[in-house]
Length: 93
Image (cartoon, rainbow, N blue to C red):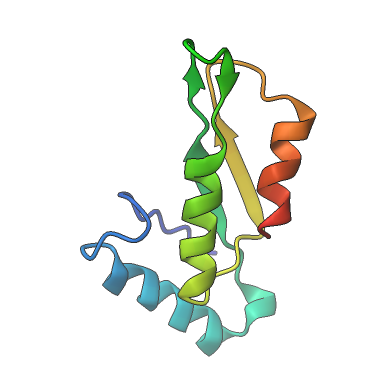
């Protein structure tokens, strides 16, 4: 088993070669032997009194556009993310 972490922001030009490399690795070894996990921040906006899921939705769409479908989506937040907000992120998958 190999665990690879790619830091940075999905969609930044600096990360594209690394994302393409892991996409190609999954093709080479077979998608059934690869697992993509995406860790993302779901910020709490005090002024609005809610968490914002749009950045997560955007980053997942960026991954999908380059051929990477996350198998696991890990959302970190300093507040509990309501079920209806979690569901918004599942829709893009």
